[in-house]
Length: 213
Image (cartoon, rainbow, N blue to C red; front, side):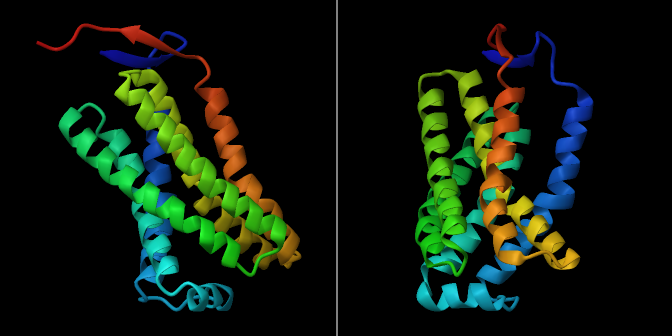
C-alpha cells in the first residue's frame, strides 16, 4: 500500500488535532443547521425562502445532501485505516456530493444574490463534482496518494459552506454592505481553502510499504 507522508514524515499530530476540532466546532454545527433548514425544523431566511418557493424539491434536497456530505467526508477520512469502513463511508459521501453538487447548480441560479455571487456558487458546485470525479478515477487506478489529495481538495471546497456563513455573519454584525461582501465571499470561501490545500499537499510523497499479511 501507499502511505501519504509530508516531506518524508507523517503529518504532525497537531494537524490531526486541529482537524478534529474543526470538525467538532465548525463542520458539525454548520451541517446540523443545514439539515434542520432542509427538513423544515428551522425557518428559512427570507432570501432562502424565495429559493425554496422556486425549487420546492431541489432546494431541500440540496440542503440535506450537502449537509450529509459535509459530515461524511471527514468521517470517511478519519476511518481511512479501516479499509472496509472507509470504502463504505466514501461511497456514501460520494453519493451525497453528487446529489449536493448537482442540486447546487440550479440553487445557485435561483439565488437572490448578485450575479457574481451566483456565478461563484455555481462554479463551486462544478469544481466540487470535478474533484470527486478525479478522486474516483485515481482510486480506480490505485493511485492512493492522488486520491487522497483530490479528496482533501474536495473537502476544502465543501468547507466553503462554513466560511461563507461565518463571513456573512461577520458582515451583518459589523454593519458592512452585505451584497458586495457576499459576492466576494461566494468565491473566496472555497477558492482560498482549495488553494491552501493544494499548496500544502503539493509536497506529499508516496512511500511504499508492504501489504499487511
